[in-house]
Image 1 (tube, rainbow, N blue to C red):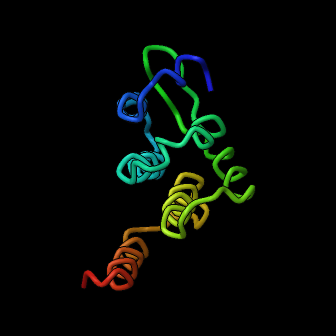
Image 2: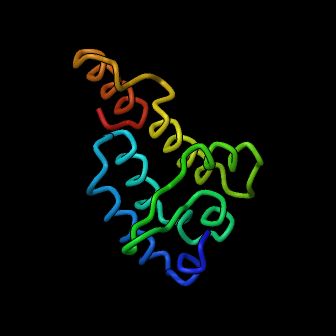
Image 3: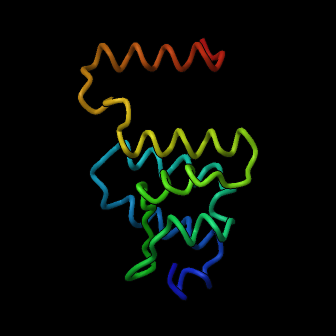
Amino acid sequence: MSIESRAMSAEQLSRALTKWKADCDNPFIVAAVTLVQEHEGWLYRADFRESCVYVYGARRAAIRWSHVKDFLEAGPRASTSELSILEFACALAQDRYSWSVMGPAHREFLRRAVSTALGEL
């Protein structure tokens, strides 16, 4: 983590991530970053920021997902739901389940399965 990023608030970091997302053409990474931003908790944690966030240039920031995987494997102290959010975001960003190569029908199966599991259907 750079000195500049240490001086950033979680809100400033979120804005820096949003700037980076504007230039990202990978919807899975955009979704993963958005999930971390919406959860908010991880952006306040110095250990996460030091291990997983890179700030550069004109107040832009990126999450290094390979570092997130290592961070999670190290067993950070967090609630089950906090860890689950970050694990899912990491899986999305790294396309762990090969969703990027699925056709529309299989993506719809996934949408319905997730909605059913979360009680939204």
